[in-house]
Length: 203
Image (cartoon, rainbow, N blue to C red; front, side, top):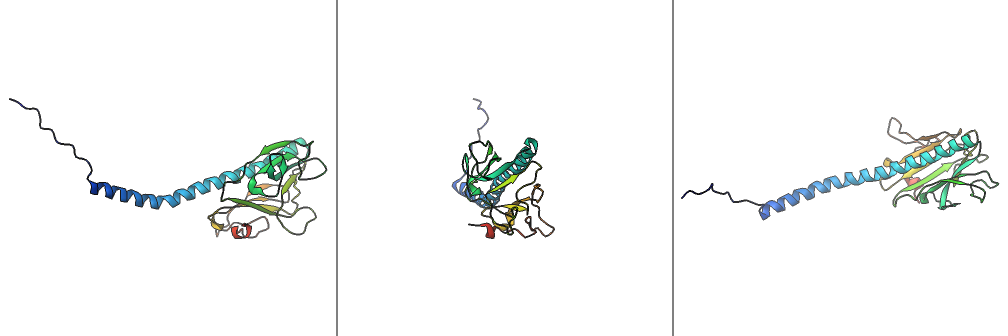
């Protein structure tokens, strides 16, 4: 009687092989996890820097286009300005008597949500007639694109990685809005030429 070809029994993982595989995977994950977390933080920070840069440029552009005054303020609610930029920001037409305050006759153009937990944005600016740079709760652009930050100013973004990972937006005396860049030694400078430090902006 003829028999078919002999079947080779299937062989699975032994317990030892499985444990070794799991150990190697755990080691690889422990190496990759910090890099992955840094990538997530960087992406979140970049998105908010781009969003605020866009809001400031949009406000300036609308002020010129409308021959009007348009402000960006720290958000308290969807229709009121506050003092904490970490809660988001509001772009609105700001032609009424009280600058930096959304009054009944004024229109909100854009809203931004709060920053993710662990992130922080702050600013230092010199306004018209002021001598010192301090935290400001709004910046207003006029019909020619000039801002009330006539002495310039800087928004600084920080997270748990500290100063080495900081980002910043500089607003010039003319109202021009630009993301701050690192110099040849890798240091980031504000609109006043000072090195940016997350320790100084932490609350």
